[in-house]
Amino acid sequence: MKKNILKIWEKKHFMEIIKELQSEKIELSYENIPEIIEAMSFYKRSRRNPEKCDYYHQNLPTPCHPIKDLNCLLCACPNYNSKTLEGGCSINSKKGKYVYHQNLPMGKVWDCSDCQVNHSKKEIKKYLERNLEKLIDISNSM
Image 1 (cartoon, rainbow, N blue to C red):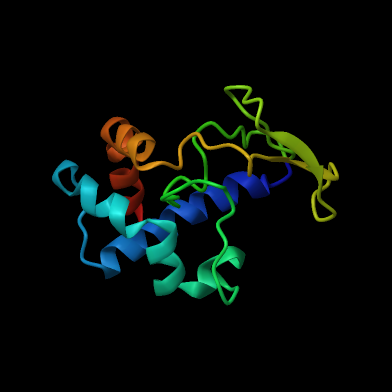
Image 2: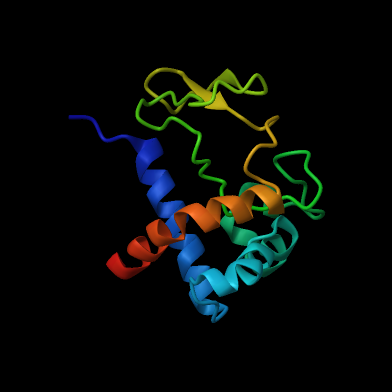
């Protein structure tokens, strides 16, 4: 059975997010949702951890998505279909597309960099209100 590198990346991303929140002394709780959202903003993360993302490395960080107040908590988008090696979108967003990627066995990967779903404060808040227990479970298993 082949390892699904997208699933592995997704889990790693959430583990990194949890570690960052722990280092900031922000507990995963419903009361702390505003603090979690703020801590995961693109601009705060890019200044605090420039090594975490290629988009943070540039002299002037340039977001991967053209969204005001971009939030990185859901960089591993919950609508991203990571069950296959080339990915996809479970909500069939018209903003996504397949792009060539030399490091993947299928030669392509779903690119949702033009999509704005799940990267705004409003959408992150809704996600956390529905899924905080999943992040707490990940945290407890670390």
